[in-house]
Length: 247
Image 1: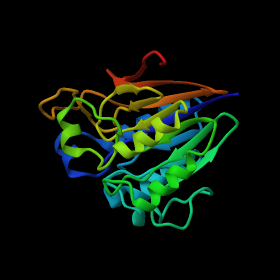
Image 2 (image 1 turned 45 degrees about the horizontal axis):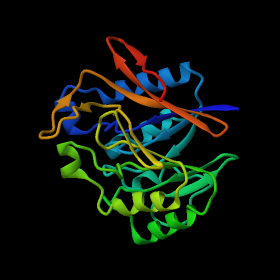
Image 3 (image 1 turned 90 degrees about the vertical axis):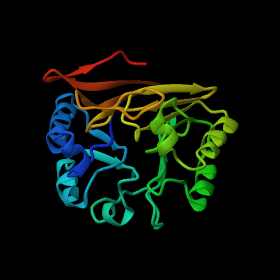
């Protein structure tokens, strides 16, 4: 049975910087959620960076009726998110990481909100890789370097250890992330890293400066059909959402 997931990230609600750039993040979010609903998609993974605490209650209210899986970004805190969100898979630790599996995939959700993966979480992650199934990892920060200045300035500390564990395991692995506000895909042997567009504003992928554009915003659709996975970005341009080919 085919399953579709909306992966949405980096909305930055009520934050000063997007507002100064002329971004209405709440309006962006409402348009995205309307588009997700119009496609009949019920499963939503939010990839981190909700925004200011002033928007928390409103944010979670808009997601009622959807099957939400949440990870945290560097603009989020566990203490704030835990007021509104808990799922059946997470433990009692003060970080939002958890996992589950279906017939074909192991789904792993990591918490990189501190800018690194804690020792406790990393040991748990290594244990969760004990599977023969294909692996889907959701994490806010990319784990494979990208040729941009934003990667040089705002990368996840000790990210190589996450990538190396996936490489050593050898299972086909998909890593869905955000943080860099751009669309990008990188393959390193059995690991495919897929960076998604931001729901707020984008950063142009160039090597030597951080250049922001507010011309579009969007999210990503992930299609899973048994053991096959396809994904494509959805961008809001010229008054409507446009999709590209699945890859």
